[in-house]
Length: 290
Image (cartoon, rainbow, N blue to C red; front, side, top):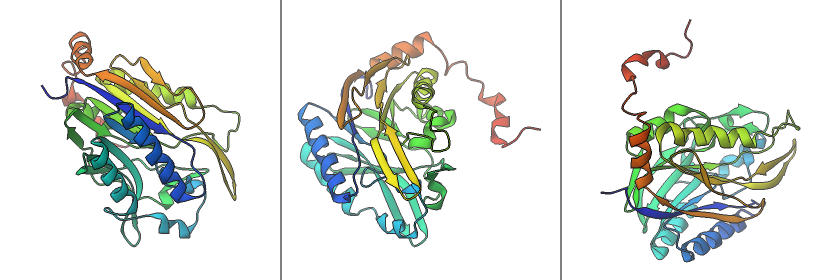
């Protein structure tokens, strides 16, 4: 049955430099290396083609957006075909003037499987994403690959339980989260990395599925200050146990073999989907409950 085999997945964690072409070259090199080590599904970090530009407001950064098909997506599509792998590609999507999305595209052996546009858009010191990204309009799709059914969410999406539940209900065996998260400029002594890890692992527990999160690393400067991205990319199993985590704060491939049969086992023990009461959850559709 589709989705109940084993698959090797890889996360491409790396620093981003000012030279945008260099970032794509770094990612391509790591993807090739991961495929050479047997990876079958490979996921990039969020907006890997450049440094994290939402640190500041700069109208010129709209020029970084590209259409799909476009330079980065075309390059990754050809790479997917050459290596016979699934590649999950994060990029800044241009639709038309004034309409830009934070988007992921999925390719399998060079075939376009579809895209997801980030729904939850943060706004805060040096995470000024509402200036650059329109809220996603794709719904929460799953992508049926030859290795199993996957879902993709993007960074701020990972703090909300509802999207991962929807993907699980649609049959996702694993959810990938391309991310760009690090230091909090207004709280320099606050380390959110463990909270981040625990929040995302919880989605895997609540839905008994695999989770794979890839985050960028390193310091990136802006006119207003700097941010340090903490990496900690990881893969967890349907019980929420981390089976592979980044070992460094450097460029690194995080890879693991996952067995989707574990999903069946976990769901037969913890019957969360059987015991759900969606008929009683209508209040969730309200923003505030008075």
